[in-house]
Amino acid sequence: MSALVTAWQLNASGGGEELREDQIASKLKEDKIVWVHLDAMDPEAKPLLKEFCELDVHVEASLFASNTRPRADEFEDGCLINLRGVNVNEGKDPVDMISARLWISGNMIISLRRQRMMAFNDLREQLARGKGPTGQGDFVARVSNLLTVRMLPVLEAIDDQITSFEDMDYLKRGVDDELIEQRQNAARLNRYITPQQQALLKLSTLEADWLSDGHKTSIRQALDSVMLYLDEIKELKERMEILNDQLQKQSNGRIEHTMYVLSVVAGIFLPLGFLTGLLGINVGGMPGVEDQNAFWLVSLIILVIGIAEFMYFKWKKWI
Image (cartoon, rainbow, N blue to C red):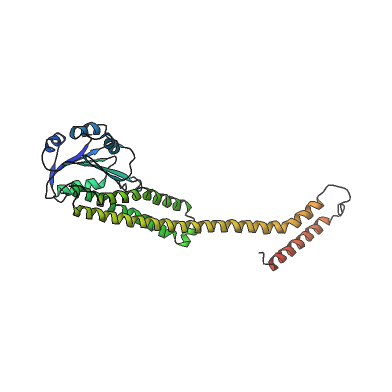
């Protein structure tokens, strides 16, 4: 399988021409924008990229790094953009956010993925329909919004789960493990969405020829959505903290009730245990040793004492 996922030469009307690998170098010599999308996991990706452009060693390392944080940084010969999106691939956990890496330079758009990303698939389909990005600024703005809009269903799913937890009947059935999982999900989303906010903010103020005011406005729309998502995550964390307190209170209540019952039982049986222990010592002179009715007499005394203790506890409202 080729390291090249797709390549397009964009036109000014939202369409473009899909390119073969052997066409890319010649198309880059023209004035039109060329988008090259590579699979960073393919060992041929680096050599193939070097055929199109010579990258700074730090830029190349960031594009192919196994772990990245959202960023938007300017270099002398281009702009490096790393953004994150939820993982909507089949069988994957959506909160394991995957990265979209972009390098904008000259008339090139270089994008890399480590896993399949629906945002790039959407752009490919838009170009095929003639409704795709018309330039580099439009491309970046669309990627920002496509990545952002897919975060909402994931947050809504967590919100729905927390809402169900807030049903007290559901709480009584015990949701400790599920609540812990959702708290972890919110923390993992917050880990990447927070720096994504900073990256989009920096991107929306970037002074680049290919980034118009309209593109910056579109990026700010993605930024506004991300800020709302962060507020939503904060609210979810507060609600989950309240739920955790309720669960902890219920757990402590069950423990206290159990300890109280055990204390009452121990209180009732303490004098009875003392009496049976005293009568059970194996020394001479124990009364009733020779009496056939002594056992029943002692049992009756113990029963009377037990009933009396129970009535006393009841009167004192200890039980």
